[in-house]
Image (cartoon, rainbow, N blue to C red):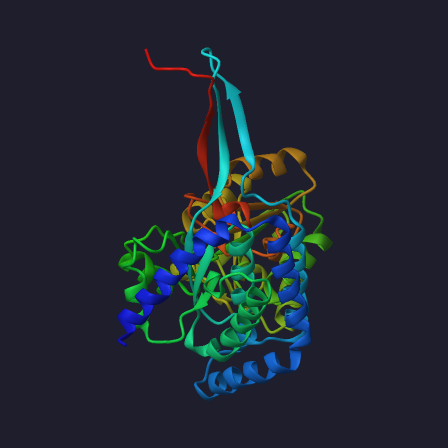
Amino acid sequence: MSIQEEILEIAKAGREASREAAKLSIPVKAKILTDVAAKLKESRARLHEENRKDLDDAKAKGLSAAMLDRLTLSDKVIDQTADGLKEIAEFPDPVGEIVRMWPRPNGMRVGKMRIPLGVIGIIYESRPNVTADAAALCLKAGNAVILRGGSEAINSNKAITALFKEALWENKVSQDVVNLVPMTDREAILHMLKLEDQIDLIIPRGGEDLIRFVAENSKIPVIKHYKGVCHLYADEAADLDMAENLAVNSKVQRPGVCNALETLLVHQSIADVFLPRVAQKLEAEGVELRGCERSRSVVPSMRPATEEDWYAEYLDLILAVKVVSGIDEAIDHIDRYGSLHTETIVTRNYDAAQKFLREVNSSSVIVNAATRMSDGYVYGLGAEIGISTTKLHSFGPMGVEDLTTTKFIVLGEGQIRQ
């Protein structure tokens, strides 16, 4: 069987299974998810063994430290993933929810009901925990899912998918509700993206090159997440201790993820005091600073920032720094160079905070917290399918509700059109 034929068979099986997934009861979905959560913890040794194969291959290929971090299935990641699945299992079920109902003058009642999207294709890189998160969220929302992970995580992804299939089989549900594309050739993606009759939505997660490749080649609607150029603006009314802690945490805690800080904006009135202290902390953590001329006059150790630095998603221990005249210039900078991902303001000024919340156009806008807080798990979604930086059909971290759509329902008593 050719790659094209195999992908078509997987997609057809997913389409058939999606009809079953849409009708699953709340208790059955919850049971499957809690069973998988238990299996993840019980199969820790097996998962580590498969993940070690991927890590060894990745190291031999010279993948960066940030990529290796994303690839690692540590005990913490396994436990957090399992806990996320249990949380998703306990969420209110969105399928069948009446979102709104209103009466019409002729006595009809018109409403909207949440329904599954159908078959969702997830194309992603590196992080094997995405396999569990994506499968769980799609199942909870009544969808079938086709997973296509990167070659660097193939062994880990197969092991996690196998746990889902075990749980589906044990609960007498079609194992095709969760399928993994077993081949790593990019050709498989191209064939997958042409199957608009079988797959309803494509969600890519990974580097900008992957997202653009998917968007340019897909006949299926795509929810895009190009990159995370996240900003923190230290306002003139900032608590400097807080601003320092938030800047360091946002950049250093996990520099290789999309909600890590990439540009620090500092109000000119606090630059002389704030920049030396935050630079000292960041440089002590190994961060390379690239600053504007004004920043470098305060901290000469900074390298000169270029125009490209303001657009950069480093995913590394590098940070661009710019002194701005005030909140308006900060917002203008974010509007010009940002990626609609996550922006933070640090301020004790209520009006400044409200202005930032209203005028910054990103999918997560935060007051006095780290950019790293932009995350489905942190937001209480249990897990996320991804962080959409496009406004259709969802914007920001995508949880269970974002994997449904709505249909109109009408309750009548014999009304006819005159």
